[in-house]
Image (cartoon, rainbow, N blue to C red; front, side, top):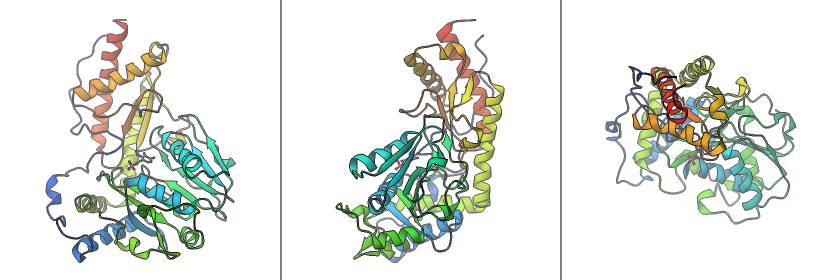
Length: 391
Ligand SMILES: Cc1ncc(COP(=O)(O)O)c(C=O)c1O
């Protein structure tokens, strides 16, 4: 192997991070100039904008008319923890965990809420937990798209229509890029920072009528922090679902989110967002198929993410290295592309097997993914020569 020439074309945007994700094409700070700053978020200009974000998200996602949507504090984590703390404990829980975030939810349910009837259905990085083993007479907690392994559920067909338990879904890296089967979902959460390239800070909480019924009929035995509180005197706090947030939101982040929602509408809505992510992921897949040093971490093509694409290096001389050496090789490759200004933040997640993770969500341009593939080959060749010398 000889050191190749640098590819001629650079991605025009090197941001391939899996969160916060690339801003939409054409974004500039100018879009923030009409933000409602220095005013109470409870006065009508602010409150109207918050409600607009809820209504537009509801429409863009195609949520059923009787599903509610709220803006919550503390990004996706805040929204999902509020759901776990408010709803769980009424019956046994099945938690699906096949990468870092699923394991995190499982840990919180067992160790913080200390529920005793918990089954954790686990799988190694790259695989999906056994969906056929899920018991829908229990509550079911899962992540639609495992951002740290690039493994997603292929659809919602495995979820029982006539379930007794609730389904609670962390959909943060799936919402707006993957088709979520809403009638199968009782609770879903996502943040603004992922597929639409918004800012972190606020989480969105989707509730089905069955989830609302649980909230109004069940009171958990533990104390409820104010920022998780979804009911008042045993009834749903309806105001939260029309823009009266629990505490003060960032109106700057909100303005940015409204801008990205308008962009999403202008390009054709949900179908187009999904198509963009699919095309980006397909561009990467075509290169993976033609490249012998790299493979998907996700074993089954039906479970491969179209947003957080996770790759492992399979060249035999690299796989023969000890664990630390393999990790250093992947880190070196990612670091080389970052210092060239070609791709930022594409090393695998800290808990995941060493490799690469490339965000291909809707705000990423396909031409940039295409350009990146040549640079990945270049960086691999450079790293390989440095490690093993000329072959
Ligand atoms: C699947 C999943 N869940 C939860 C989170 C946490 O999101 P946030 O930092 O927006 O709370 C992330 C972030 O990457 C994620 O990928």
